[in-house]
Length: 383
Image: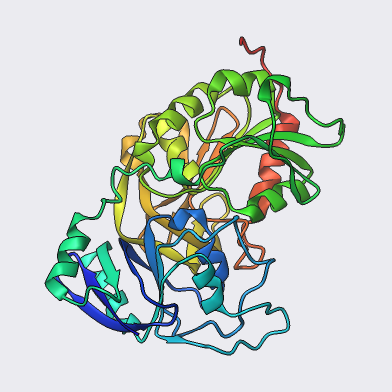
């Protein structure tokens, strides 16, 4: 089935749908990973985006139940050069096409992904419309232009959990919880962590638990007063989609929590930390999305190979507090990849240490969070 992809600047790409008829719109981005398409599909940070895979052969190892990062697919569409219809892998439990069809997510092959990626790199990410029904280029271009902008969009509300949930023993234990009556499980050797869900990946929860944490996942709009009443040992700020400046309610909560307990932020959580500290963020030309981004850890000069997925970045010049330092820098474009506060237990990174492409380059960050909680003396917090 023929398909057309129309970019907002008028550029047209042709392809074929391997999932049936479709029409959708969103921001077109590219990911340079050679594998991991199922993790990409289910990463909430891709909400509102159509993902182009630069690796040409996609679908060759199928899909399974273990490699998901959330409870559903979040991308608007998957664009590939060549779809592999017959998977060959001992872990495969089904075909990628069937997996996409079950969620009504378009899969398009035959796209010149090399040309599309180069166009995005030169012109920047942009809105686009995809269809197997409307094959009129001018009409599709207009639909692309009329679709919502990523800048200024609060997509966190679309992906955050609706109710608090306790993560313990590798799964969510309770999805119908009343925080007014919540009691932490009696585990004297466990660290109590409240995780603000801006679109959290499941492997982050697994990594925290592996380090000895019991995690209470809460909606992104939970207020600071409630967090104080819960009395966690630490506060974790997750990854997520959209423009961080649009998530002002979370910025207010984080600002009030700074200095009250150790805080660790990843990706969107990192950007929200910067905003809470009085800084600003800006939109990158085409973002960082892939599993091979080199990052310099400034404390020791070590080069870490990291997994990344973000389109916004922290403007370090906007942070005026001398106690806030850059901890990591992206070696491709020298943008900020991490922050650390010299006086209070607070740090954040733009990349994803839980994804472990190195494979162990950045897992020490979870240990750093644990050490902060171990060494931090709780101040008296007024409710």
